[in-house]
Image (cartoon, rainbow, N blue to C red):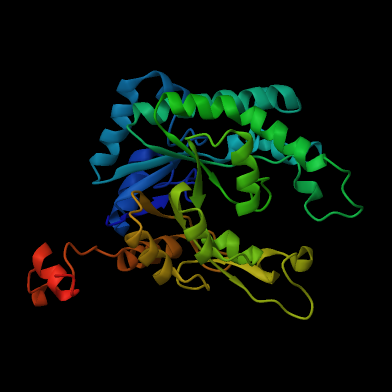
Length: 351
């Protein structure tokens, strides 16, 4: 068994223009001071990393790792959630997603998609240069507007959408395979890969690609009322990344999973800081320990109530206290009387 690595923190929700969140060195010092051992970098945030430069320069990547090491931190993974979203965008979302892209490709869906694909290729090479083994992203979505069909979906619509999604991602998966890095899709509402079935539909269409895997985040399953505990067993071979994020679902006579177009505070399903929600993290961390999860436990802070810095401070201790230092021996070894094959046969009455 493996002891999970951590605690680590995803810096996407913390990076900003004010110190200490405006440079890699200063935000690393902040994270280390809270007790984190690793950081996950949002590859789109130029305040923390230049993705193209990381893809092209080993020296630059060594400098990134050196900056983190000065604060006792490791780099856990890179993320391309925003760029991955732009690999597949339904026209209904064109204007809203344009802000995720570089200014020069906004307003041009074809150019924006090409830019996103290039970004993923940069991310593959940067991950290799940084010595990483896993990478987190979103799948994007072509079929999401039709998730709850009324009027009834035309026959073949979803098949066409997933065929196209797989066509777009297959070369990217190949690029990650060439550099020995797993591409882990966060299973997330709003993406075409939003539950186990949709992941399977995609996995089949990319030929069960050896680099096609999952970033596991139980909070999104709570909001969908999906069995996040059972998910671990069904998809154990594909869970290669882990976002530690809490959530709660409290339905009422007035709203359920769709939440009536309400703000985050008023929704039946809400993201919460660690320990404030309903996720059974004791079960999850026990499962991770028992099933040789090799990666990091990474805080992703999203909460509609608590201040982010309070969530980060409490999250480090929460993860640290949930990580199970795995045992190297059985608890009843002291009572081992020793045996050999002859004794075993006698005990079974075979001789």
